Every structure is written in C-alpha cells, then in structure tokens.
Length: 221
Image 1 (tube, helix red, strand yellow):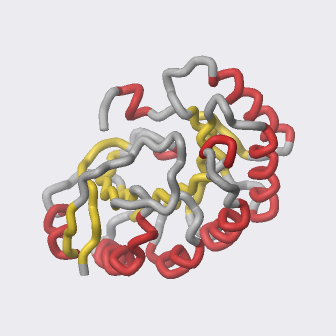
Image 2 (cartoon, rainbow, N blue to C red):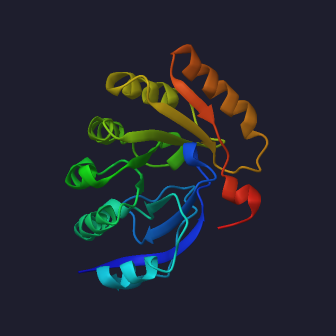
C-alpha cells in the first residue's frame, strides 16, 4: 500500500490552539476542494509505502505530535488507517488537519485520532458551495475527541456564514472552540472584520478566539 505524499518535515504548528507546538508534518497530496485562498497547492508528490514513511519518521525526535495534513488526508483513508495504527502502537499523538467534508472516512479512523483541527469552509471565503451538512455530520463524529474548528476570514467573508457556523456549533456542542484566522496575516484591513465576527460569536456565547498563522509571520515552513 502506498500514499501520495507532498512532503514530510519538522516545524512548529502555526495555526489554531496548538500554535508553537513542535510537530512532524506529513502532507498528503490531493484535495476534494479548490478553495480560492488555498496556500498548500503543490505539483510535487511522491508515492511512498507505509514502511518507507515510517523509516523517514524515525529520523525525527523531540516533537509533540504528528500532523496529518494536506491537501485532504482523509481522501487516502485506507493508507491513513494503517499509518494511524502504527503510530498509536508507538505511542505518538495523532493530529488531523482536515476540511471537514468527509464524515464517512472520519468514522473509519476516529478511534485512532487524538486531536482534530477541522475547517469550516465558509462559502463566502472559499468561493465554493456550502458544506454545512457535511460539517455538521463531521463534528457529530469528532466531538468526543479533542477537536476545534478553524474558519478562514477574507475580505469577502460575510456575517451570514458566521451565523450559520454558530448554528451548527450550538447544535453539536456550544463549548466547541471556533478559531477565526485571517486569510492573509499581513492584511491589516481584515482586523476590523475579525473583531466584528468575533463579537457576533461572543453575543451567541460561542467560545471564539482570533489567531494569525504564526509560521507565516515568522517566515518559516
């Protein structure tokens, strides 16, 4: 069994509530979405067997967890299941970064995961159709794990989308954390919009915070 992998590297987690944590990133190639703000498009990919990947991981030490990222890692679910079982046997924390649109595949691997970072794909931000039902179904599965939600905010992001996200959070678990993240951490004009959206969440008693992409502001991968 092999997987299409773009890269494997060690760095710090730049997003969400684990900012600054040392991680090994396994970036899976391919995605089922084409968001307008995507910053992980890569033409490079390599077919790697499970044993080859594990051998590469043995080069690293001193990290908090392994991030399965992409692209969308859940597209390669059969390989992911085998990898996750191997990592769990080694006592390694598994951190999944996902677009939250493949709940059926999440169900197949949920028992092996420790941390889930799920994106709300706001249609006004992505330029794509809504995925509200998929996000709801995904969160219903993920909620028993350590899960938080990210939403990218750009110049085009509208309040109606945040209100819909709030509705889903309340339906699943109102204690879930929603992280608002600017599309471009250097675009100061987004600060006011982020504050407006944060205030909307606060008025609905949603656990919300604003974070920037630390790795970009530090100029690292």
